[in-house]
Image (tube, rainbow, N blue to C red; front, side, top):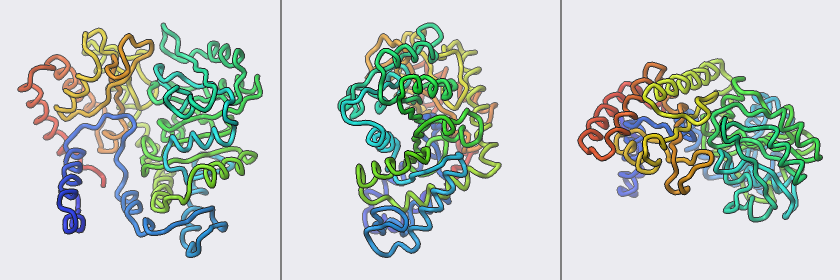
Length: 415
């Protein structure tokens, strides 16, 4: 089985070869990047639809172009499904991805130069939570909270200290490399102490929130942002949920503040993904994602590896390679050569530089979509350990690659 690129090949054989090779790579690899997943055939079909051809600046019933009689119902469908799935007052499904969604939250809730507080990038946060190389650290006075050096978990007393010290206009919670439950209610209480707006970024855990497997920030946050891929298993896009009082500000921030026309093909695919996420089978899927993460964590610990925070509550693991006297980048490259795809990642209080950090980040969303279960996580952990123990042994890595390819053949990709 391969990807159908017949029309691409007729026009551009070079690109067709690259698309086919990427399809083969995804099919033949164990994909453990925590921010990746496999979209369903229905989501892919909507993404590649004729909606690619249509421009739709504005919002349903308030467009700048004509010919919207089918576009408006599609966007309204996505909006209503998002509101119903997450219990939100208002939803905007036009952000191009997660970072633009976060930028819209800043645009709507703050003025340039305002103080903001978010989780430090080196401690599991995201670039857009106030890091100096991001717009969020350049255009706002950003202050960041760390995790506890002993537990490696968010210390709400320290968060409160930082917030009370700086009295920001906005407090941001959420992470891109944090394997534990985030106490959104506690963040909301702290933000309220200083009259700050509270924004929750659930890009990584939106699927768990939708399935009721992680506390939802929607009842307590002013604004909630997310991607629509990752654990939500939709197209590459973004979404903003908010309280009714912020609806106008959020919509104006997205358009005309930051974007032009929405990507209608993505909007349609988001609508499909939200319908899929509302089905009972999606909760069962997310339960398996978490079960697989626990099983993989236990298996890796049994191999002598150290996990940041000691384990996981969600879909991702952060592995500290320091005790093995290796760093994340060469390990990630060796694993990739063996057909096991993850990413090098900093760990809290990492003694190494960001481009060659001490850890790797692993997620179970994609492998679970392919039907892998707890027993399969034991095999994956064994392969990871074999590669770690033979980083310079090309023959061993090649053998693992062959075993991984054969293993993956038993788990078809959904699209």
